[in-house]
Image (cartoon, rainbow, N blue to C red; front, side, top):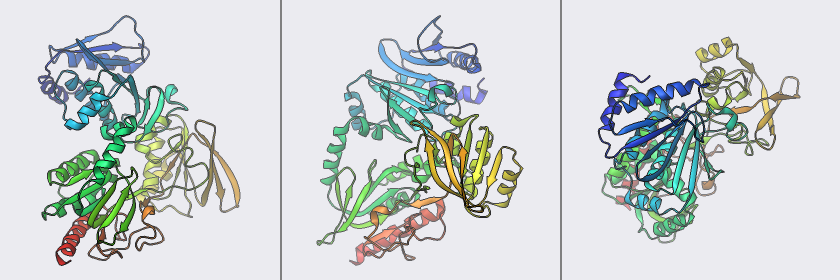
Length: 516
């Protein structure tokens, strides 16, 4: 089942166990994953005398699944499905923590988790190809390890398709005590903010008490992280306020154009960025969204977060990045996460055997159509123009695939569905000027990215598209405010150019400070 190299790595981890780990397995002989699960767990059991596997004759729960416990402690960690692919690491960490190996977690976060009252039962629906799912699974498993009032079940949505139908159309999706809590990538901090609402108010008050920064960076992607590191290395008081550190890197599977690296996983690069930013002495404030920027009479800039915190700084570097562009048609916002999706790699497995549409004509749309064609019953690729803009080789692959139909000159008008999910896409055939109805279970929007700058309109100069206008020093139209990355007018939106512009903005901000 497991390759020798992987078994050797797991064996090394299991030598760190400090107490027994009991694994209880529920199987279904009609499901092939049951046999694979038993084989894998048998191999794990053979690696350590502290690991034992039991298979009760009967028991309640999803099948196939297995749970981790340790004698004398109430612990609820369950994997419904075979945690392979990206989730194998989640399983290995759960074994390690269940066996008493101390987890790496901030002491304040740990105390907050341990103080939560329950019972709190989390269920996370994932696909094994999803790169955003492991952080959710690992965070909830860790919370279940630290607090006996918390339990967590990871559910492989592609194995339990009947269960997720009309309930989960995007991964990761988290339910708490049977009610949907959140969809998308979240960590312990974000989960605590949703569950422990008083902590949000406390953190906002604490942030407002911070003395003014010399440089405050808004956004934690490649540009913002680089800017924060460069500024902090100048010995000036630097803050970074962001939803998360990593930005678009977090949703990138593999990066192959970093020049100094042959390739790197997006989540690995994001983790490295955060580690380096924190090691540089930057005051990192995550799970925060800035909603306004104002210049005060005393020369300071005042920024307000969605949570109500007020931050002050002598200079500001804006690197809010970009989000998936939306169609902005009726029904789209209603069905996001219920049939309208933006990541074919993550959510595609949930549409196995179904009919889907991809909207867009560039490389992203072509790649999404090809990925989905290997999973779904049929893919309709809707292109607004009279030709695709994707690279020639991708267009050839799309044209040659029997499971993909390309419709040119198609304008999406509306998305329809029942109370639970999408069932129809309405578009206009620009040639015949008539409305067409397309029966689909899912719609993947692949029309590029939109700068996340709506909150800045009226504050400084921007293009009609929402890009912040900058000069070659990263200066904006507002003195003391600089900008970098994909949200600016830089001509190319690439990881390396974002990092370079972040460094430029930080050096320019430092020059501004010493001159003023």
